[in-house]
Length: 208
Image (tube, rainbow, N blue to C red; front, side, top):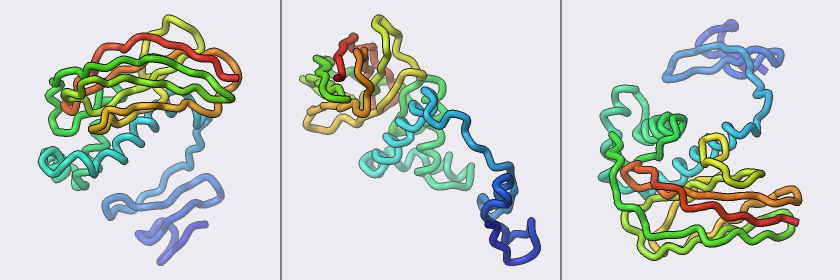
C-alpha cells in the first residue's frame, strides 16, 4: 500500500503500488522504482554476497575505534555513516573476489595464521568442518567454499560462509540442511588488512 502525505509521487510517498512500483526516499530524496523480484533468491552469487554481508555486519563493532576511524572521510564524501562505507567498500572488494579489510584503504598485508582445515565429518543432513589454528598472527576471518565435485577451485560462486576467527583460535563450522550426498570443502583465511591467503586444501564429507 502507498502511504501519502500529499498527492502521489510527492515527498511523502512510501510503500508499494499494485505490486509493481515502490516509493521510498534515500538521503532525504524521494524516488519511485519498479518492484524487482529476484528470479533465484538463493543463487550461488547471492549466497556468497549474503555470507559476506553477514560477516561485515556482525564484525564492525569489534573492529575497534582506530580502524573504524579510517572510514570517516569516505563516509563523509558519500554522506553516509562509517559503517555503511565499511560495508559498501568491502562488498565491492568481495565482488572482485578480494578479502575485506578492517581499515581503509586496504593495505593487503599481514602474516598468515598457522592453521589447517582438518576434516569434514558427515551426519544427518549436515557436515561439520574442523580447523586447527596454532598461531593467529594477523588473521581476521576465514571463507568456506563448497562443491558437489572434487578438485574444485574456490571462487566467489562457491563461497558459502565467512567466519570471524576469535582470539581463542577455536573454529568449527556446521554446514546444515544438506541433501544426502558427498560434499567437498576448502577454505581461505584472510588478514585484518584485506590479504586473502592461499587455499587450505580440500576435504570431503558425506551427509546422510
